[in-house]
Image 1 (spheres, rainbow, N blue to C red):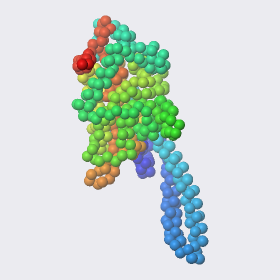
Image 2: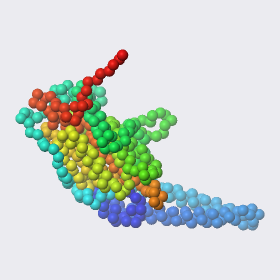
Image 3: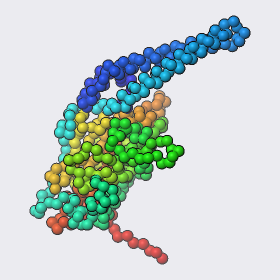
Length: 428
């Protein structure tokens, strides 16, 4: 949510910045509603003052004016009731409009209409050339008896995958490796989060109301529970909302959190895209990074959190490129986003494997997350940032393709070899 004062004091600037995101703001409607809101509030305040003054005279019940004053107060109460009702409706209309308005891009975000206008920042790693026909990760998974698409369809339908044996094991140790890296080297606090959240939590991070069709909604947990629930599309949702409606001491910032979770997405509109195997599924795993910082630190923190995600790819020796998203390709809540795209030999192209974003105070305004500034004792909205560190299924698919051998077997990246230990125990 944008600062409402921007619409009241500088609506032309807001409109101009939102045009860069291909979002057309109805200036006249917003100005009209804000004017109505302001006029109603002024009328209500005047009537409340008048009511207070009139009430002072009710102390003397024997006064000849007592009945007249009482009638006047009743009249004021009736008028206040109607005005407050109008104000509630006006505020509701304003909120409904504001809820659909995306974040304002930072000044260094390039203008563009879609992903074709994204800007490549850098490339890392050597792309290998093979002296044998390259297999994709689906074929490699089948050869290694590790990816069972048919079982996924039988159990749950299309865009669900069953993994077995070595592939399932690699998937598990990838999660462990990513968590170990971010916890022990990048100093994040590991968090275990619920995979089911209230819809107000999804509103807080910007998924609702705009992207309701992308989310798996579920029935209430029990008859007496009136809350609406959904499966999380990313651990960003519960991690960011850990500070829901909280005031944090300034010396506790930055807060760095990491969580592994399954993610659930309907993938509406993904028909026709490269969506087979582990590339695009309804359920996938991800290790998510979240940082909560002071406003003046969010720009440099985006660079840091992106480097943390890049480190995973570098340690796995997977070729990738870093893209700065244009205004037309950023997510709804983002002020600036980098995408990391990993190389897939079978397609001879890069695929997104991580998205790292500075959300500025857009999410914190929705969830009312603030910090208390030491010098002034004022409550200031924090800035929230998040990044995939990384999407596990796509990382696994990239390893399978980049580390494939002629016979269809898969080499294990050196960084993962310490995790490839046989389990043993002493039962005596």
